[in-house]
Image (cartoon, rainbow, N blue to C red; front, side, top):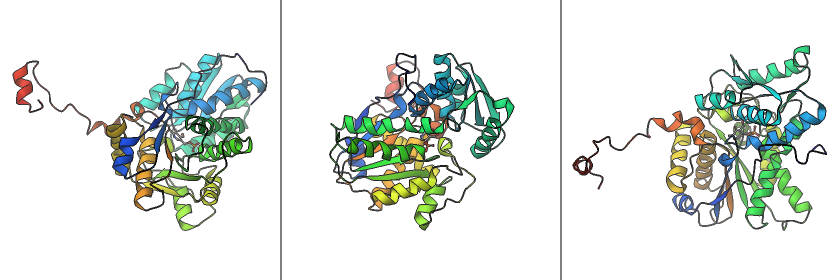
Length: 349
Ligand SMILES: Cc1ncc(COP(=O)(O)O)c(C=O)c1O
């Protein structure tokens, strides 16, 4: 973190709720403690506000005048909002086919939003080219040329989880993967707390979660490979749709070193899991949260997660941004005239 930033306006992300999820635990056959770290409560409704808070300070320290990023949706909104609050210009880049909720969130803060005809990986490649071009001079791309700062922001998830558990390490964490940065920094944050003596050292296992339609890390893990073969994403979990994940090899290392795993679930399982979390705990997750809950269920079924351990599952984004995923099955139970007879006739009394 660059020095001398105290008192500067920021969006104050973090310290989101850790929800003890007993009803979800009962449904999943978990007898130990199950918690959901719900990062949908951040200022722009995803964990990306954490990483941007650090990157924006680095951008100021380096004298960048435009804040930018390549984004699968959530980051674009977080950058737009942080730039607005910091009084910086922003220009963010997204794939052209994102959910309306993500597009509106990225545009509403008044910066420039550019939709690229291609996948996230095309967007990211384009941004790398722009950094090397005079047109990109003075631009700080939070997840490209400011990536080392941006990435450190995810460590706060690890710090908060331990603090909210009463300065304890969880036994197991289930974390969604797009580029893999967040997962690697959660591991780093946990190791830092151990090194500082703030938590008692004990083994913990980190599990990664992907959607089957974009599962390059999961495929490599299951095949026992060290190298990630890029894929072309095809999934409703668009926020996780990175076909060539920059931190993928590090995720494989961490999953293997800690005794975890990387697993994936189909789009139908994602939708099912969004509904399960909403129905049992009153938490409306975006598709990325459906991926982690769905993978948690699968790992428990396969005996890879210990049902008696203390487990933390991450929900990194808000269901209001991916309404289409569940819209078709989320309609009024009945449409009636405003009188009691009609209500009785509907059979809901
Ligand atoms: C809601 C949500 N969860 C998780 C991730 C994964 O982040 P990472 O690229 O650090 O793996 C993203 C990335 O865009 C996201 O938007």
